[in-house]
Image (cartoon, rainbow, N blue to C red; front, top):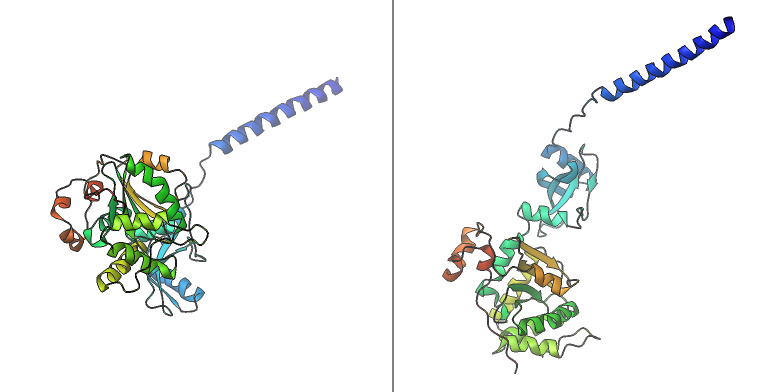
Length: 324
């Protein structure tokens, strides 16, 4: 009898422990988790203290802004490089560490460049495209119809050459127009060759000649260099180089175009697939003209100012390339 009672007691005790444990677990699950307060925004003084310490007094934080993932961005200049443009670096949430280098987003986007564009260190793609479309760049427009693809091209750039070869048949059949902005950044001979192209009576034909005689082994364009270019041409190439740099271009080719979603896109390097890129180009942009600096707007041709879209503003006139 006692043994039966003890067994029943043990069974009841086990049942009560299970029920109690279930209630405890349910209560724990139901209890609200204490919310962690987000860290307070960092002050410029605190960011400067960290940057000054880490750089041994050589770097100065000019301004700060909210970055992704709780990071704080800092616009930094350097005492030992006073002529160098400011750059963006990142500070963690408690100002205990710096992140210097490229910050990449989940889709592979360059968050450093996007931040530099946001704070005005670099031109946003729409402003870069508007500047590239100005007559002052002496850009070479080839093709008679289709959406416009703007390409910053170096006469000695092999990837520019590969892109030119892929675009040429598309231009010929009217699938797109290509605007080539001449720069000189690859080799010492690039400048004289760019000058030869821009100084030619028919720059489009001169560019075509450079590409037709391109030597892939030496990565040299086929145009004969202009050893004594005019000051106007020299200044133009220098200004085009500066424009590409201001747009954040690290090399050639650099592409600007209006996409079908109404935005202006910027790509650097050889596209993986030109046909895929072509499918992204907008033939009838719908974006509104974005506000530009007064100095930029005043220099735009009147026919461009009458256009409603920023992408239409960038189209300009085209002229088919001629050989000879």
